[in-house]
Length: 227
Image 1 (tube, rainbow, N blue to C red):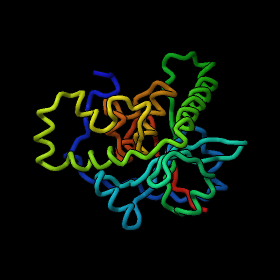
Image 2: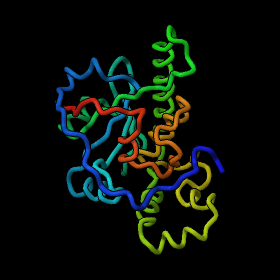
Image 3: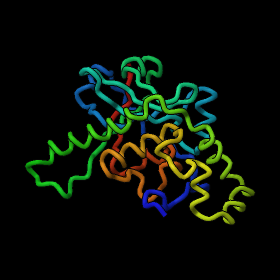
């Protein structure tokens, strides 16, 4: 079995509240935002609440910070659009007070102290490049529906009769590098491909949801962005 795919989604996970809002204006927050950081959208509106409830999470969407022509950008895979990139100010304008910024802390245990800053920035760049490479990729509607279906008792029972490899094939077809992804699946795989880290240990990318990312020890809540 592939090492990044050795645990399925936990259907018994309960909905938990996110961190207390710490609103900071984007202009003031920019000095603390870095390429490769995580952005999570708080649930809002009918569709957002349905997505969050379906994933049993406080969050309904995940994306990553990129830097293009010295400007902050949001790299994401979302429904209706697929993989795309928009400016961070525009994203904050569209969702004021709903975007939580999480800082990414690369693992540097194997790096000499005097080189850690430069290696950390390099790994951040590689993570962002891996996410940017997903531009234009279709949204994984089948994966989202499969995860939702797995919470039904009948589906959970039927899944026990499938070989482990086939369970993952239901979501990513057995080859996630060429097929559609949903938001948090794309973010999780970008961290793994770019920096070689499993931000949600032992949980398959194809089963990683926004709420899972918020509990990662490598991703720390920093602030809630407002215009």
